[in-house]
Amino acid sequence: MEIYNNILNFDELFSTNEYAYNLVKQGNIAEFTTIYAHNQTKGKGQQGNMWVSEKGKNITFSIILHPIQIIPSKQFILSQCVSLGIQKVLRNYCEHVTIKWPNDIYVNKKKIAGILIENILSGNKISSSIIGIGLNINQEKFDISIPNPTSLKICTGKFFDTQQILRECLLSIFEIYTSMPQNNTEIHDNYMKVLYKKGIKSKFQDNTGIFKGTIISVDETGKISIVDEQNNVRSYYFKEIEFK
Ligand code: BTN
Image 1 (cartoon, rainbow, N blue to C red):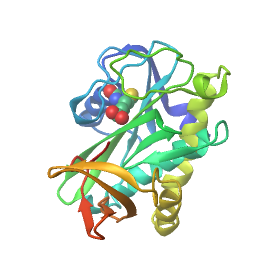
Image 2 (cartoon, protein in one colour):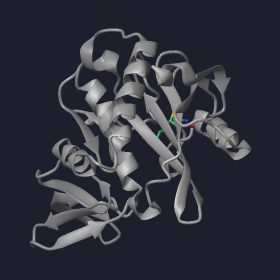
Image 3 (cartoon, rainbow, N blue to C red):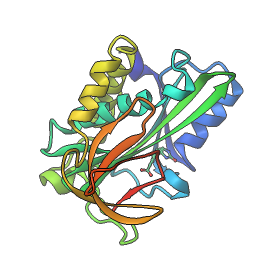
Image 4 (cartoon, rainbow, N blue to C red):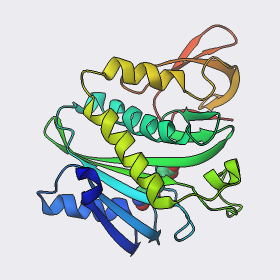
């Protein structure tokens, strides 16, 4: 499979996303080139956080895509493809694998994988997209500063071959990505089916405070809608709301 022959392996990088970004800026990088690092010294997480991962125990990688068929306002479809790709692999090994909006991968109430997508726009097109994925595999102890972490080892009691899981993730993401745009409705339906806490009353916090509500939908732009206890529908983009 072509995608497996296009993996650039590094013992150590600051960040695979940063490396991929610099490659893209130099131009002419084949779609589905993957940057893999056994260790990241400055792994980037969402919202300016660090992504910390014990050397060699987990997988940290970035896939370069050129999704010129997706207009920037519909870029949430990429998040859905990638999170579903990872969810599909992990559900073969553990139960209760869900996607926490917008694209964290959870097992029960704990986070097993995080995704950081960085797009490079050119006019009204996404010329390149750097899909950064950190998936916890064999790590058993995490720093107390990391909220809610888990790993495949913690969930199953077994150790896994990290390179095998990497290949499974690449194939799974590739299959869903290349099924777009014909399959966009199915991708969205599958995303909604495995959405964490969908239809279950939960606590949230927005800029007005904490409230109880139930997730009812996520639209194609990634906006989530929650119905509160007064039956009002409240809608939010990423970073405007958090689970409590
Ligand atoms: C999150 O905060 O949930 C997103 C974490 C994304 C981490 C991955 S690890 C590989 C890639 N390179 C980075 O620097 N970050 C992403």
